[in-house]
Every structure is written in C-alpha cells, then in structure tokens.
Image (tube, rainbow, N blue to C red; front, side):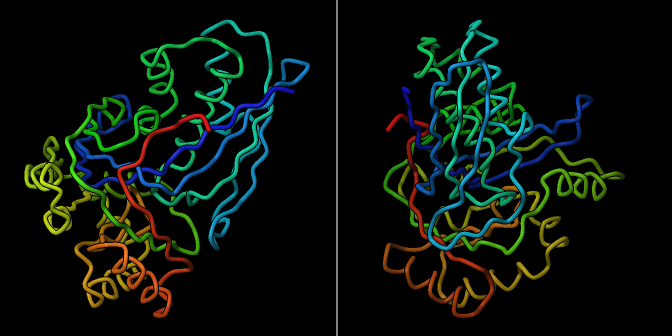
Length: 305
C-alpha cells in the first residue's frame, strides 16, 4: 500500500489580541503566530475501499496524554481528509495514523496541526494536485489556525486567525514549554473572556509594533518584553497554579513568559540553547509542570518527509 508521511509543527502566539464577539460566534483576532519544532507526524496509507479512518499514538519526550483525542469523524484530520476528498471528487479512502507530540488541549493547535498535515498527506497520496491557495481555502473551513500551519514560519493572523501573511524575522528563538497535567478547553476560555467583557466590550485588536520591530531585528529580549495574550487572565483564573510557572521562569532569568493561546501550556523564552536547558531543568525541579520541552522557532509548516 502506498503511504505518505507529513511532519507538522505546533504553533504559538507571540501576541494574541482578541476583539468583541462577532455575530457569527467568532472573535476578530490580531495575532503573531510562530511555528516551533515540536512536531506531530501524520501518515496517510491507501486502502481498498472509500473508508477514512484514524488511529492516534502518543510519543515524545515524556509528554503525557492530556485529554482524549477522537478517533471518529470528529477528529480534525479526518475532517480534513473528507473535505479534500469532497473538494476534488476523490473516490478513494485513506487510513490516517497520527503520532502526537504536541500537547492535547494545550493551546498549541495540536488538532489544527494534524488537520493541516492530513491535507498535505492526502493531497500527495491521492494526487489531487491542489494548489496552495486551494489547500488554504479548505484549511480555513476547518479551523482558524489550520491555514497558518500550512505556512509555518512566523506570520500575522487576522480575521478570526485564518488570514495569514508572513512576518520578517531574523535569527532563531529558543523556547521552553511548561506542559500542564491536563488540558484546558478553548471554548471555556473564550466564554470566560466574553463574561469578563459583557459590560465593557474590548476594542478591535492590534499587534504591538514593538513585537514586530524586535522580530525583524532578531532581538530576543525585545520579543520577550513584547509578548502579550488577551486570553491569559482568563486562563490563569481557571488554572491559578500556572502562576507558579511564571514565578520560576522569572527567577531563572527568562526573557519572557506567556500562556500559549488559550492555555494551559506556558511558553518561556530563553536567551540561547544553554539557557533553555537550564530553564527546563529548573521548571522540572520545582515541580510546576509535568514536563518541560525545549524547542526553537520559526519552523516550516506541514511538509512531506
């Protein structure tokens, strides 16, 4: 049986500005995405019928299964394969196998990453010949983060996050991700955000200019100082123990720390690789997370291997 395999990175938000709730149930976002080399792999194998199935395996350096991952049509990778098949009138099926390293419900778009990988893998397996624009259009229908995970690198995100444009970046950035013992529902965090702003709607969001300046200069300290996330207060209210990660990171000289997306993963910016290793060691030694994973960015988006 023919097989294709795609590697896809996790995403983080260096800034995440969230506007007032729209009539369609989404929020306008102004964000800076970065892809980091904490990667899932999705393998697509041809089958003799038209079934689309998925199995999930957990791997990585001590990462734990944080929440159930659906293995039916609710899995985003399955939805991606079905959407691609419908768009190109493909008659074949596929067996998908996901090796998960990106935290589940961790604010790093693990499900969206697998959807992006499934699009690339099935496009290659079925020979649909989809253009990048066609894949992006399908991706936008699957979730706000999926188009970025086709791109990778560092990018601005607008609309509800699906409008992606590249950002100039110099150098590499060294991150440590403090992995929590359980996930946090994105829907619950956004609901909490709406409750907080029920009587005082937030303004339309903007990306901090200081962040873009620091990225263009390769200024890690400047990036650390400019990190921002409008959802962080809600995530911390729901999971107050995450404050301990920030305290340890500050004591260990981190350039900055931020809840990743809707959380609960906390991303900690280090000066260099050695500092990253020291931060990971300190976070684990203090017992403020179940794992501390080092990674760098920016990283390419979903790609065949």
